Length: 120
Image (cartoon, rainbow, N blue to C red; front, side, top):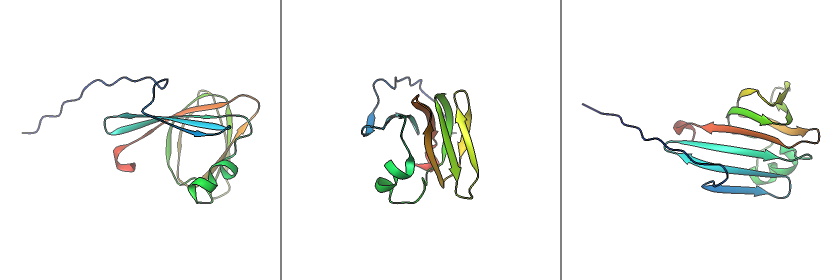
């Protein structure tokens, strides 16, 4: 017989396990919660994935699936097929791999997404 037990895990994004700065336009704070990873992305006005992240990623579009929630701000999103959407505070999202993203307006875009164990 297998017994599954879980333990409560609480951690603040103010004290992340890892912080990845993309100076001066972005920062991703990472928390490892057991098998899941939680990421808080803060993208400042002027951030555009193809300009700021493509050189690091080495791909034309972001190849990571993101499932999460927009805390504040707005962002434009273009999928590989050319479909465009606007994300804004209060939106929940499931964005497949193969997309571009940029900040809209003068407010930072802040979102939290969760990476399941099978995607790590």
